[in-house]
Length: 225
Image 1: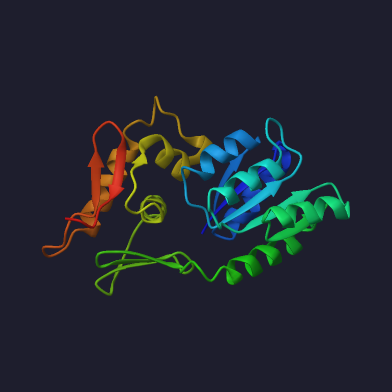
Image 2: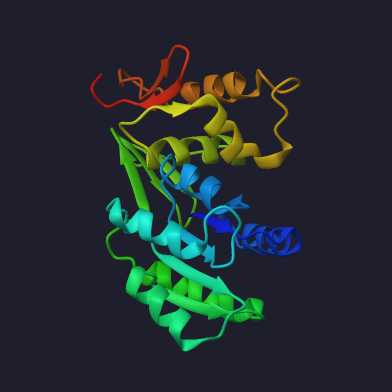
């Protein structure tokens, strides 16, 4: 499960990322509304935690644009405002839930679990060919046989499956898997090494090569053979 947190409070972002990653969620962050939209339109998220008070474009503007684009990703609004008017406005724009700051971590986690359970449009199991990846149990099987993937290999495969049929850039893939720890100068070959190892593990008796390289762009999960 991948969650995008949109907030310009660096300390809060760090705390939420650490807490959610301990619960085995994959976390990405954005510090302003424009960056949030760039990420939302490039990546498929399971849930968005969206602050209202943001630089460049506020949370209402972000929410309005993603709903107008037809994206139904669950959105939990986070704000220091407690006005009923703001809450109604957020819900009218398409927010799924609303949590006022300061909030307890336990309450936030409960809201997240409830929202992900309610999101019946998405299956926790991602598939391609004979591959099945369970985003909840973090188990990957091929033809019913359990595969032993490293955490990085799992994250790469999960990200590609979330974007199945669409090209994923090397930059977006690296940012998703390594986050702010990725250094394009010293770690430029990390993606290729992990993709190579992942392909070896996924390849079996005549099964098609699912991960295809698009030269100059990145990778795609391709079921066309």
